Length: 117
Image (cartoon, rainbow, N blue to C red; front, side, top):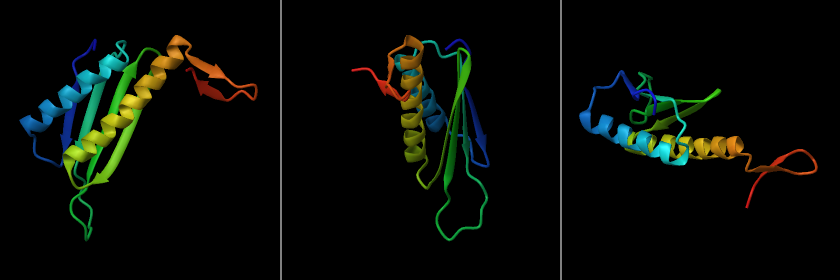
């Protein structure tokens, strides 16, 4: 990445273990598209009145040339599961962006895209 990853904790205590986990996951995104400019991850534990356990929100903003990929995953009690789900979604979107940039996406006769084989 051209810029260092930014990590923000909102309404949740900072954890070196969680920060290291996020940095590792973000670094893996570059294997799917090496042109990533920057990444900002926000981890939040909103104060809502619920009968369930506390639910975590994870938002990932990925800057790529000419665009921004935003992933917002929320409502999971386990922070690591919320991070996994968010980074899995980010990986799929980064891969798709890379395919579009390379021109690997074919068009059907009706104009809808289809991934190349």
